[in-house]
Length: 350
Image (cartoon, rainbow, N blue to C red; front, side, top):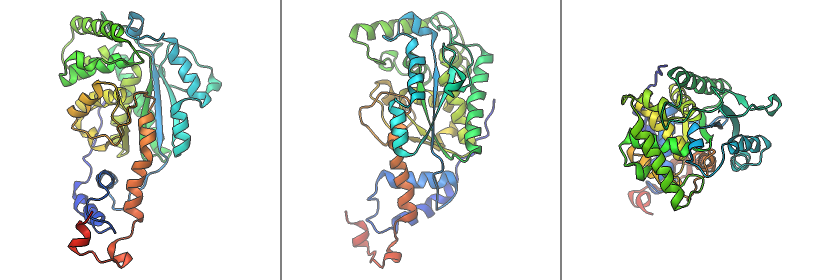
């Protein structure tokens, strides 16, 4: 599936910066908020951008590799956490309510059949991936279907009025997929990529690394992004990559969460680098590999709060800051409006 992603209008940068520099403040004094305002203005091709119907889609999927011992938690936790999401009791629900963000829960491939009255969005590819210890996690057909279903869900949200979207995930053992993708796609030593995930001690971390190292050594495929991604990915991670690519095609702002979500973006960026132009990196995860992902993508995150929960929580917590960037651009008075002198001395103080 191909995505026609256009580069945002960079010709507006100078006009946006001029508008920002003549606000009633010293030049550069709002720091990253100014950078965000310029980026969002360019994406929306306007000097007066708007954020409409912010949405975070949380994709859930199970991983066959979990049964090989890479996680201290059983696979059942995936569907149990989906139940918690639907009951409104998870961290992402709390932050979504707090910040006026619509939270949508998607079954990308959970090893469980949800009752229809739960209102989980059914995009299930299969009841979890296969283990990639000795073979591919999914078939090429499943991979393509996951990309398409992610894209279709974003298109629906866009038609409903959403122009800023974030993604979350739930899937026991998905930090393992993210670690291998980082290793293979960014050429980072696997030991640097493998972290504690849901809470391994030192012995468990060592065992997780050994299992993943064996999986990488057993890989007999080529170096194409599609084959690597299908072999080691999860249904939820692939679906998120498709969703991101479609969001960029539709000129939506993409809020990038932590380690798992950035692994989806890392893969998506190898499929179409233009997707990065639409991304705001909301936080730096405390999962060790995330710093390597951010470095590889030359990205600066808004927040560094030691978080590593996933679910899209970093995006939800950072959203009010993104909102602040748009609001100051649109609502803050200029020197001329306020009748304030903007001599070089005043403008450059601070």
